Amino acid sequence: MKNYHHTQKSDNYMLKRKIRNIIAAHNISITLLLCIPLIILFFISFLVGRYPIPPYDVMITMVSQILPIKSTVSPSMETVIFQVRLPRILAAMLVGAALSIAGACFQGLFRNPLVSPDKLGVSAGAGFAASLAILLSLGTILIQVSAFFGGLIAVGLTYFISRTFKGTSILTLILCGIAIESFFGALIALSKYVADPYQQLPTIVFWLLGSFSAVTMQKLVMMGIPVIIGIIILLLIRWRINVISMGEEEAQTMGVDTKKLQAIIILCCTVVTASSVSICGIIGWVGLVIPHVTRMIVGPDHKILLPASVVTGAFFLLLIDDVTRTLTTVEIPIGILTALIGVPFFLYILRKSKEVWV
Image (cartoon, rainbow, N blue to C red):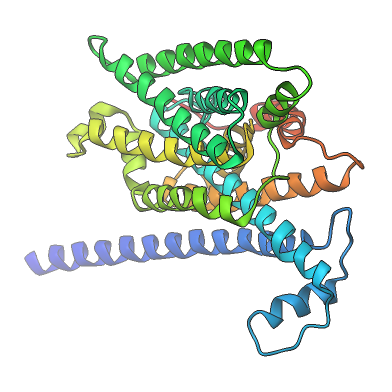
């Protein structure tokens, strides 16, 4: 009888393990399938723009950097490929991935489908710091660094102010974030009011609307490193986000230090969002819409949702950037296009989605 029960338990364990392996393989295959359109769009993005480049020239230029093949492409075309389009393409993919994974993490952490990466004031803080740097006539690198630290300071204020309240909760943190966001939004409006209307004001407005036109490889490397580190940390702890998304009490019963985990998630999301905003300005709706789209494709499990959000977000923002470069003769700020597409698409998702948020 004991042998029978032991054999039954062993069979059940093997069956559960086999099911987990099948689910894991299925999730990996979905993520890999999502990578295929991104890879195709990556190469197509080199072809589009005001300066058309034939596909053969792009391929031979790329291959010549890896293999000992002499390139027949003109130096001006190589400059366009490597110094103009490559940094821009990489920046669009990196920012899209960063905003998407930050949005997915915040929605799971706060258990709220309407939370976006800028809900704790990071975008408003970065926007004010960049506006102030422009008013002071600082260089582009200092504007970028100011935006990064401005976002960190805004979220730091939100977090520490929320800790002063008795019985701090997730709702308190969100409400403090809304207050800090409004405060820095008012400071942005004040900076635009006092700015020189002929030189500084257009620069501030264009920066706040978001664009990849001024991205260089130097700027990308400088702010891309914090983004990559933050994304890697979030991917490593993605299974813990599943636990904390069930609620603080249930997570604590499973032995999870919820306060420490919340601080790590908020810090990583703030770093990747602040770095993204410092690269290209404020781009809305990506961190709100893309996690919903990805959740409809792969489900709510953060172990697969976060990697899939990285790929989907990179694809979406790269596609939008390609449209901004080709739609009109004058480049449209990418923040405008993401809002025009994101708002109706988000309303459609809300109508069709059958998700249940507790």
